Image (cartoon, rainbow, N blue to C red; front, side, top):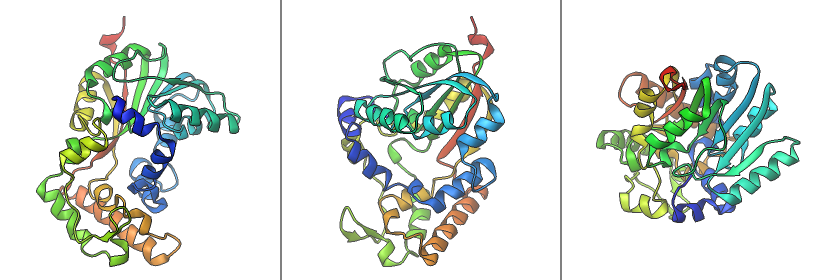
Length: 302
């Protein structure tokens, strides 16, 4: 969810946003099952389902989704039932319109708004829960946004997010890049083909800050601060580390080469998921993504 005019025009291109989604690690059903297992302990239970069941009361009057994109999260939450109303917002007006269309097609009554989380007031107060998905790492003034989230939650309300919390601007350490390329080297040539550059990659290079800024000036602008600042401003209930320190940079753009109907490709992805899990559990890598569940602090109550 961008907050600058340049980034906004990029994310307002619905076709481009869809193309980007197809290039990332979570485009893989095999990877998603691995992530479900990390969050919930079961490969068929995703993080919204698990968090909804474990941390949020069965009956919820009002819920706010930040960075809704095309609306998959708000539609999933509304379809599960038990929620009186959902307000969902995003910076990109074209994306919000697409989310409205998809919700209407499913017969779901969701209130969509265009909101710049960097500057605008949130759309209402007294929410039982505020959920952010893949948006906070685009925010420069996190302190202000977190304060607005506090003010918009009812007493005891939940703040929940699933976010990239790794190095700012994807400036991975040399040690992390070495691990990534160790696994890059074992992939067969046809899986290392970069369809954008139209070459077979020999290694993954760390993105230059200049390239990241050119693509999106808000990208991972303060990603390293997302989690520690949230811990300091909310009452933490649970954290579910969500991996990504190997798979996200390794599979970016080349994930399209994997045919998951092919048992060999699917098995190779399973091996990579297991490798990342072992590397994180052993302390060789730290997770770059996290699902975070907290409550509005009592001290912020009026």
